[in-house]
Length: 307
Image 1 (cartoon, rainbow, N blue to C red):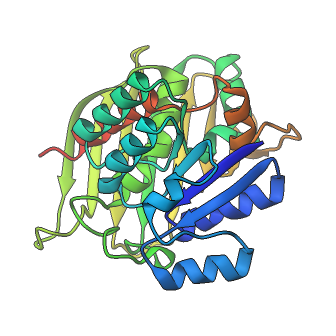
Image 2 (spheres, rainbow, N blue to C red):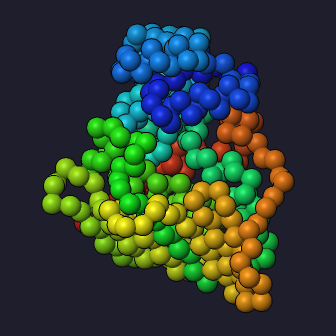
C-alpha cells in the first residue's frame, strides 16, 4: 500500500486522485492546495483529508509525495520532501529549468529516496505495442522520426491558469513536448538537437507560439519536432516513426496506426494489460521514469527554448 500526500489539486492532480480511487492500492492521507475553494471541492467530492499548510501535509503519515504544482515550485517542494525521507512523484516538466532539475536529482540521490514522474505514455498498452513493433524490426530500419503538434489556442480551454501561458513556466514545449521527448529517448537513446527556431509573440511575458527543430537520434536517424498554436485547425498530435518497411503513427495520445506500401492505413489494437503508474512505483520497475531521466528531458526542453 502506497500512502500518498498530494500537493496541488488542480485538474491534473484531480486525475491522479481519480486514478488512485479506480485502481486501489493507494491511500491518500493528505491533500494541500493554495486555492482554498479548490481544496474544499476536493474534500467534499472525494471525502479526502485536506491540510491547511504544507508543513501539516509533510507531517502526515505518508511515504510518497505527489507534486502537481507550477514548475517553479517543484524543486523546493521535492527537496523538502527528500530531506524528510519521503519519496517523490512529480509532474512534468521536472522543473522550470535544468539548473533546478539538477538540484532535484542531486537531492534525491543524497537523501536516498525513490523518484517517479507522471509520464502516462509509459503506462499505455498501445504505446508499449508501438515500442515492441519498433524494437522487433516490424517496420524495418528507422529512417525518420517526427513529432507534429497543432493547437488552435494555447492555453487550451480546460487548462486556464495564471502560469500556463507564461514564458517562464508555461507553453506547449514545456507542457506537451516532454511526453514525446521522453518516449523518443526511451526508444532511440540520446537525442542531439542540431538546430531550432522558436516563435514568440510581442508580449515578452507570453510563451512560444511556434517551434521547429531538427536533430538526430543516437542511431543517426534524423528527427523533426514541430509545434504551432493559434492556427485554424483542430488540435492534433502526431508522433510518426518512418521505417523502410512501414510507418507507425501515434495520434492524439492513444490511437496507433500502421501502414506500408502494400497495406492501407490500419489501426493497431492490443489486448495487453500493462501495470499502472502506481503498480510500477510499488515494484520500482524499469519502466518508471525517475528524476535522472526527467533531468535529461529537461535539458532537451531548455535547449529548445534557448534563443
